[in-house]
Amino acid sequence: MLGEFVGILLILALALLIAAGFLALHRVLSPKREFAEKQEPFECGEAQIASPHQRFSVKFYLVAMLFVLFDVEAMFFYPWGAIFRDLGGYGLAVMAVFTVPLVLGLIYEWKKGALEW
Amino acid sequence: MIPVPTLHIVAILPVLLLAVGAFAVLLAELFLSSRGTGKSGAGSVFVGVSGATLLVVVVIAAQGFISAGAPAFNPDHPMLHLDRFSYFAIGLVAGAALLSCLLANGYLQELRIHHGEFYALLLLSTAGMVLLVSAVDFLSVFLGIELMSIPLYVLAGFDRGKPRSNESALKYFIAGSFATALLLYGMALVYGATGATHFAAIAARLDPDDSMAMAGVALILVGFAFKVSSVPFHQWTPDVYEGAPTAVTAFMSVTVKVAAFVALLRILAQAFGSAEALGTVLALLAALSMLIGNLMAIIQDNVKRMLAWSAIAQAGYLLVPLSTGTPEGQAAVLFYLAVYVFGNLGAFAVMIALTHRGQEADRFEDFDGLAKFRPGLAAAMVLFMVSLAGIPGTAGFMGKLQIFFAAIRADQLPLAILMALTSVVSVYYYLRLPIAMYMRPAREHPHRKELDFLEFTVLATCAIFVLVLGLLPNTLDWLPVIDWTHQSAAALASK
Picture 1: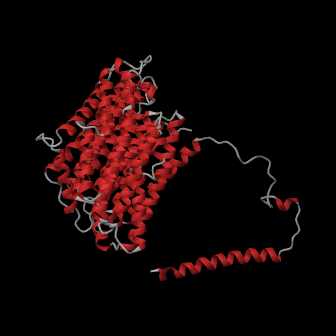
Picture 2 (picture 1 turned 30 degrees about the vertical axis):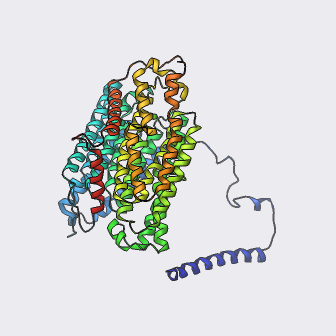
Picture 3 (picture 1 turned 30 degrees about the horizontal axis):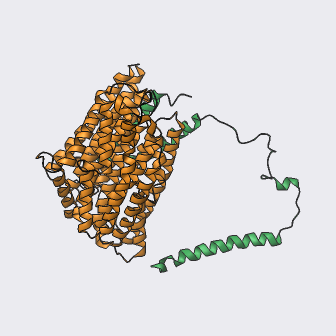
């Protein structure tokens, strides 16, 4: 049984070896001239003028969550649309079963005011 | 033309009903609260809709049990199997959910968190449990577990203004997701080893000497041990039980236990029958849960925490007959689950009835001298505590007797003795409440004076069942519970 995994183990070992090898090469070969700008986390681009740790409205979370919810569900329509004719009446009925709770969810969030900014 | 899968409405009827009921409650919440209808009016609509839905499910389960289960659906690749065993469990789960939903009305109003979402989440969680107890395929097991757990995570944090409730929800969510991940990993390993997710196919191909399959079996067991809060996978239980609103604790402490134990029974009997080492592992879990649960319950100063540790100990009692694997042991598990539902729900019902103006009655001091002010409630609490401790005359004794006999017949004498000994220990902490209520001087009680009708119904139902199961478990013609459990266990063996 273990025989099947030997290949994976080899790839793992090889990956480690390559990563470690390049790091070691860099250490040995690269010229070392250090100055202040080089120590910054981002060498290129503008200098930081404000802290990135800022507060932002919790509403973003709500919108993001609703977006993910409806976006993922909308994805389900594509494969259905592609074979809509083949599925016939059954496909329509099943999609209705899927869509009705989705629409109820939309009504729910709308009435609850989750869509208001 | 794409082949159209067949749908068996009978198989998913209870789940379907519960989902429709949940949506109805959500819509009712929207339109009633926007019109400014009085909260109590909206409350009766919520309780009415969800209670009626659950009642219909109980009736369906009873009907299904009487007609000896539905025929097998989709013989080639069944996902659900509704035999007597499933219907017994569905009836128990839906009945417990019905009682919890009746309890919630007054409680949520006292806490000012009376929203329709509570009932919708409760119904959805119950739908997951119904799926779980009738699942015969690991895919439907997983679906059921998730549908059961996710609403519960939300419910645990339902009192969202309270940090304790939030903490409880977060802890439950993290521990629960972890358990689900382990469970899923186990299913994947078992699938890898046997190439099947269906129980019967797994049973045919499971090789007890294959280390990959056994690792999967062990991980699945760990996932379920989390759900039933058995030592050493219990750490989340006291915090979650304490922080969650009492109505939620009441619901999840009984229904999750029933659903998870029933699913575990079916998995062990129909999928992992050839893994004989499991008996020893389960016996070890049982012994640890009984010891640690009962010892830790002694030192608690909060009633909800005490009941949480007691729930861990009760999980240990339930694991004793589970580890035997005999039909008698399976019947004993089912009977004890019924006993546990009514005893534990009753105890929480008393605490809920004492909740007043957002103040929960969850410290031992809250019960000092209660017998003077509320003799009926105090007497009911004594009955439930005595039943949980397993003193003769109550349901708890009858349940433990069944477990005891099942264990002895299966040559598990050490476990049976350990159970008897730890039960003696448990009397100490279960009797702390009666002592506080009857022997301590009364403090000034701010508790509201009257029980509402729904709470009274729940308390009376629980008390009657505790007495009937304890005194006449098999003598009433219309309520031969012990016969039912044996018929259910027989259905489990026949597949």
